[in-house]
Image (cartoon, helix red, strand yellow):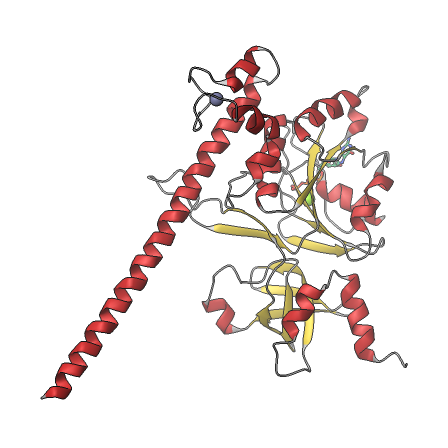
Length: 368
Ligand SMILES: Nc1nc2c(ncn2[C@@H]2O[C@H](COP(=O)(O)OP(=O)(O)OP(=O)(O)O)[C@@H](O)[C@H]2O)c(=O)[nH]1
Ligand SMILES: [Mg+2]
Ligand SMILES: [Zn+2]
């Protein structure tokens, strides 16, 4: 059979991560002559899209802009194009989401809005520099965030060249990572970069999260073998990055897959509440099942097995404190999400009651 241009297009899409999940959504379109594309960059209201053959700039249809819900296109989204206008965002496989910063109010310590960092991901690299950026508790937070979103985390410890014995960090991180792969790399010395290649293979989409200055863009450049992203030194005063990367950009890598660079994250606020805690703190959850009280908060209760494990040195108190803090945040979020679901239900009943009233009125009018 001849290779038609349509077949060519599909094979290009497959390389970019197109799957049956997206193909099936096309079956619902009556017009069969449609162009799917992937959002590979977002800057305010302009989007860079690619069909694997060409890249072009796009805007969104007015309808999508009004409906500012979570279906506004983000980097990694698969969309339906109408020339240079995005007319539809296809249902996502997953999203890496967090609570948007700056959306808390006084009464509420938790964020009010979701921020989707990227969509349709296979892996998230947690990039940590082995300088002042290194922080076990922050790694635990990232793990919880990513597990909550149902995506696979991978931990990358970079700047290994700064230390004589960088393996000590790996051992420490592995003790809180519970089977999550940990890679020790140096973007300066190209150490172990080859071991990251499976995450960049054809059809794979990976995104990077981490603080500003962690070394995300430097890593992308090294893996790409070309300086495609700007980088800049961290401040000598506080060791923090300068927020060099300001937009989300997806690079189609020479290895065949896609790697998304992100701006440094200042604050890891949760949005999704799912299995994250259980996956990030499996030993606390397991020991916690043996506590005397089923809803034990592992703070002061008699017969608390978790506190016992801390006493015996099996669990560090810092780790337990981080667990408790996150648990409180999750409970609060889930509580609020249930409350708002209740509110929606109440409003629905209000509507129905109104409709019944109108019908009754109309009917009584007929009698006269
Ligand atoms: N010693 C050492 N320095 C590194 C390494 N990787 C990155 N750096 C340096 O760390 C600094 C910050 O790197 P960037 O890649 O700009 O960091 P980023 O994570 O992209 O930061 P933002 O874009 O601000 O979020 C730069 O000066 C890099 O040269 C490494 O492997 N070893
Ligand atoms: Mg950067
Ligand atoms: Zn307990």
